Image (cartoon, rainbow, N blue to C red):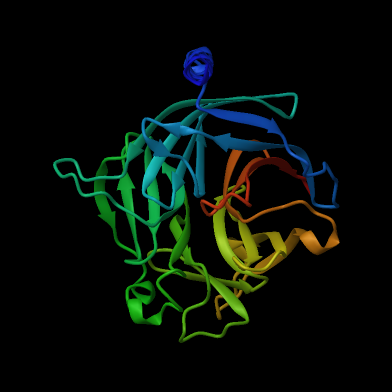
Length: 309
């Protein structure tokens, strides 16, 4: 009798796997992050992503985003580039479809690049920033390294970073300012009251609110900075969005900045560890949270609008 029951259970489980074999490899569900309106931004929609294994590699720890022509690119801390099709209609995230995932690698090598953090588009290719061995590299949309990018000389001394886990967390690009990158926390040899954004030849300072985790240009001169205060073992989550005007900096490199929004879990916000942001339309952006490969954390995708002055 027991063998018969075991066989029945096996067949039911097998049938269940066949039933879902053709489905996408993740769920997208409404998030409990509430819609809200601030003076400077408006949250339009939010979704929670729940991933299964895809081709034997689990998707987790998404920490950088880039968007172009309906495709959403994401990098994970484990050194993977994940590609989705994203459909937004009427200011809502309607559909997110998995397309492919790639290991970040050299063209003729199996060496796998780890600790990828920031992501930005440069033409049709992708800029990716790394921590541990702090650097920015240019990759194809299939995750193949094209070349190493020269970064500001102030960022080249690895001993000046607070730790190996506080490296080049974010990167952005536009034609006027070129490639902009930043460490998660200020370097050891600078005033900790200010964050610094670095181009190849210039430095842009603004008041520090938390740790830098994401960068994206709003327009030609203004960049939005995603910041967070997060500790793995503490329940509090804090996320801020700051606008920095790179054209307004004085001779001491201090730029005009504006706090657009702040989300604090101690004030009722059901937020998580946000690490990536990208522009998806005029004044519209998506940010993503890194689940740290932790069953108690979530991957959240949040669509928001920066209001025009």
